[in-house]
Image (cartoon, rainbow, N blue to C red; front, side, top):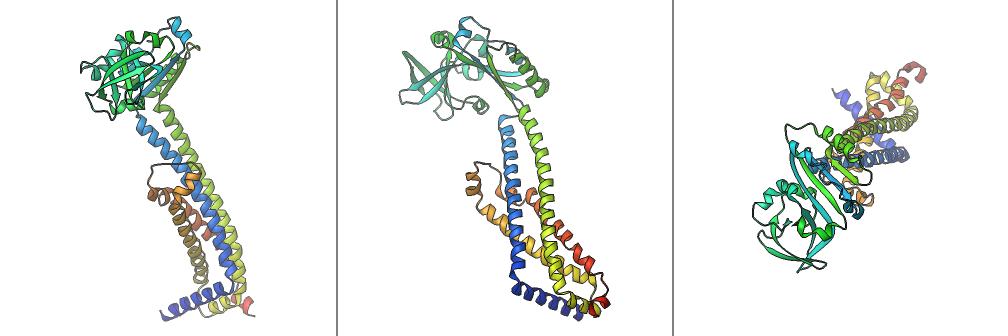
Length: 375
């Protein structure tokens, strides 16, 4: 036991002395590790943030919702183009619809509100609001319910009652929305509008991707009318593609990082081993195993590489906001998970695999007979 302690103590002192005498070797390994780990961390974390952003979009949009926006210019309105070709969606779920006009109304306090006109066909989707008995109402997320608000748009004055906008409808309307019966907004409608549908799929309805595909086919039926169909199926497809790319990126970066460290550390390790070849042979002649001497190289390189990696990742986490603000990438993901989760696990695996590979030349050199070295 004492011989092992003495051997370890001697090897540690010998390693420390070599570091002091040849700081360039430690510095070279540290710089290579810093650059490679830093680049790998930024790339992997940045890509992970983009994946998380898509996941957040899917969560906020919902897996049951479809938004259709059909833009109709004055010429389309003039010839009386139908505005109900997507209404069959009602049989598969809840459908909110309305005509979003190009005009904006302003209250006496200067508050903006989009104007949406509705017909009898749109009433089923508005029952949760019309049940209060106000045909003209403004949906808002912060106006007090029941507040009477006077609006002005051009020469038209509108008095509306404020109602609380349901959270789900915030996906369609990002600001206050003033709902007016269509017969009161004929003049404004003639200047063009966007027919908007917000659909929530029922549990027994066909899958969302099939519904979306059918709607997109229907949307191409008349090129003169611009139709946009938005649903989470495209986001889910994009998420699957990004996750596949993420896995490939991990493998490529892991291979490049591990290979670079194996090459640089391996070259430096074998050079240092040749300098201490006589001492190693002498220790082996005293009964110290070759495997034990090779492990010393692994521990030395692992200590440097993992230590630098920990410092680099910690610094990047500390400077995360400044770094990614410059790259214009943002996410609500937890920083602890970003920097000490799956991405950095791959980095540390690649680092340590590279260290093990870099030590192979030393183990091969240790197979040389002691007699050949000491003679």
